Length: 201
Image 1 (cartoon, one colour):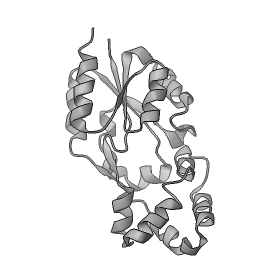
Image 2 (cartoon, rainbow, N blue to C red; image 1 turned 90 degrees about the horizontal axis):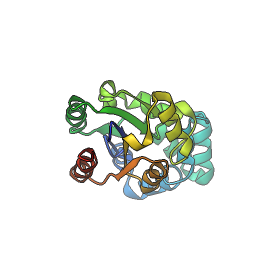
Image 3 (cartoon, rainbow, N blue to C red; image 1 turned 120 degrees about the vertical axis):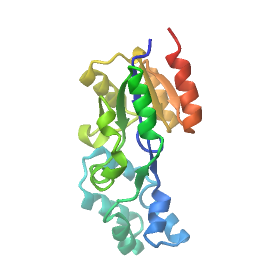
Image 4 (spheres, helix red, strand yellow; image 1 turned 135 degrees about the horizontal axis):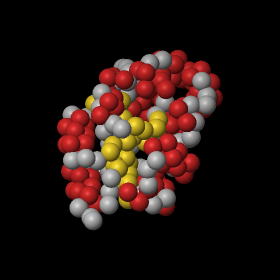
């Protein structure tokens, strides 16, 4: 029987809109792509979510990949306000599940900078029973350890939990530990799959 529902945050309960964020800063499409190739599209992005590197070190590593755009990279990531934005359905969906008696948790690769700069997009957090942001634990999905820490910290059983994430390898990692997994594509699709699991006895 499912008792716990665990949500990723970016592109599940919020929009992780890095492309629109860079466009909002005035960068033309060619520069947006160039900035992305030196930052968000590289494995370096995991390091800011891991919370081990400070912001300046991360920027320096981005710059090493494309030194000609140092100024643009610093402008892009001086503030990340607007990179993570609200999805209107998040609070009503969580309230409805909570009213039905399910315990709600979050498990997300998330940086401290995004947490601070985009706090207004995380207005659903008070509805949750707990959760882990990767920067707090210095480990990122799909490392099994981050899932195990969630289970241990809140005394949860994987077999009583459903995990929703928009990244297939993160869902697979959860399933290998005993979670029911849902690869989030749309709210409608995910809700239908979730209701199927919740109906099981």
